[in-house]
Length: 375
Image 1: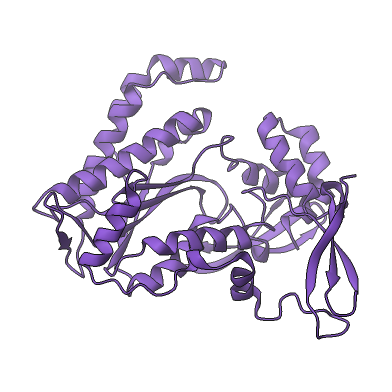
Image 2 (image 1 turned 120 degrees about the vertical axis):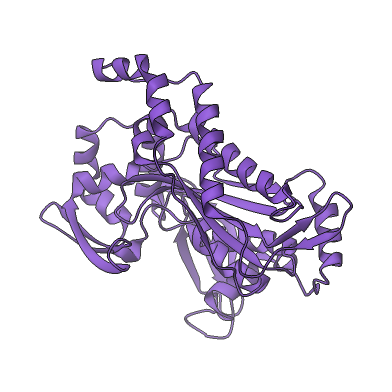
């Protein structure tokens, strides 16, 4: 059972009821036609017995539930060269539900200040000698969903448990304690709301929204009274654990196919983890229309970067800084995943004989020309 199956069965009915943006419609079309002849076909030929097979192309859309495995592995391969021999911490910073309407109607603008507020908060606290006194490396990943697929914007941050000082020395953090979450929450709240107040935001034209816009300043003031949830998990067991952990968050979509349990009589049942009830896995049943509505809440703006790097991982002079940090932390330079070919990476994912010929079991299937043109 896949998201594509749901679109094939109930997608057109959903489109007739819901108004999707042009970009969301393109996402819809990409997922619907992924790995079908609509996107074209490639021919693979065995290099031993000349057996041939035709394979439909993938859509490669970042929201597609069928297309993330290879993309994730390639991204991880690139990032592996920047690992440092230090502890890594995982922090999650969440926006309160009261902001959902504002965020959803102004996604590109508010997501951007969300990233800025998060990175500035962590860097400012880390620069404080009371906590670290150095610049760490931060990989920040935006997610907009909860386990029930409802709108829930939050950012996961993978942070090096140490950083580079102004005198180019490595400063290691405590192995059990990194940054106080209450201090992070208060500083993050102040930075985000200050940036939000300065934005020229869009509000839909109904009376309720226009009244909301008129009272927006007082609405922002009320948000200072809320508790903003910030969570910092214990450190990983070393840089080698970070690679697998990153892969669980970087290319995740609102729901994976293995969570979709059944599709019948116009209803979709899927598994979800209830964090408020001891992380118990439960079954949720919603109409197909509601299921798709929830999924398309999480289509990101076209071209929006959902994974960003800060501190010593920022793009400017990154390789020079990382080389220095690896030297200072005595990081062993084994073969980097970045040095592997695409075939090597596919072998890591699917096994040594992922492209073994199914007929002769001797040769291997290789892409051949010409490809079948797009229908």
